[in-house]
Length: 383
Image (cartoon, rainbow, N blue to C red; front, side):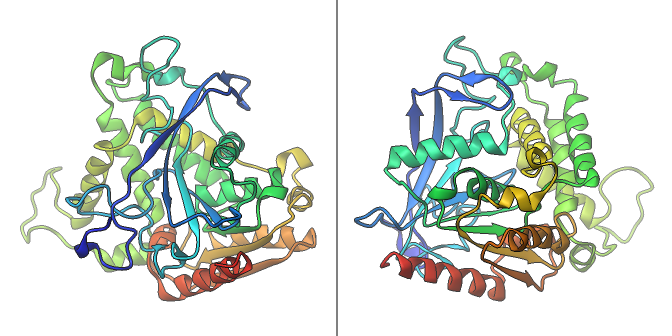
């Protein structure tokens, strides 16, 4: 039951569940997990014919806790709470929403920070490399467990949007609608470079210990903090940083040293420290490589339209004008490929100012577009 102060638009207090899978999963890297766990949250009610289920796929630093609160004392809700709940764009009065922490994650699913059941020790750097396609396979196994033969829609932003694309290509009969937000058909060299610098920051931390840091009772906080600071800069537009910080200083007196003086320095250090308190460095490494490897057109000779020939669902592609990391031009590549493959697709470029993180923000126009689209999806399933 939700607490009164959460309001009617919240899903209230939710309880995550850890689902154990004894079936093996073969990974693209050539290795196999003989068993694994997935942390899952659900919101709303599955209808009688189990047709109103929506899969929410998370981005690099996300997890299964997409909406609501875990306790009455929580100060912050799930990472996409602005979008998921009664009367919100992903309306839990009409849709049954499933959100999970992907394989390799650090919020309850099997990953580097969990225990390897075959050794009794932390997986650490021994955890296998995972890809977006591997996540789709695991998510399909989750759908089977929940008795969901076909998703009414798969929805995700950034790396989540890439998973949605892979779902539409790999499991065309199991997706009714693909909602691809702030995504790209593959990373540019610049984006791969950002990820490599972040990884090198982690590798160079003396507490990294070749990924076995948990066995030694330490964490590579400095490296992970730097990686997050770098990443956070790429999520914000120059305009957003200028409006929020400009060249504001914490004091009118120059220190002539290397302590924090500018407000933007303070902000980035805070963001970095908050991140290391909740995220695992090995997971960050895995997630960035999954981003780098994503390229569904690769096995089709680089022809994205050929890959999209497999798609059977309708798609909605949403981009944000201020997003320079995954720019609207990259979203239009997805749209053009779908059009070339003669697949039904709608495209919207949302006026925005924040940057890549705009997909997490309650921008009215964005929410109206997403909500109207998913309302039609709900009506198709009698919700």
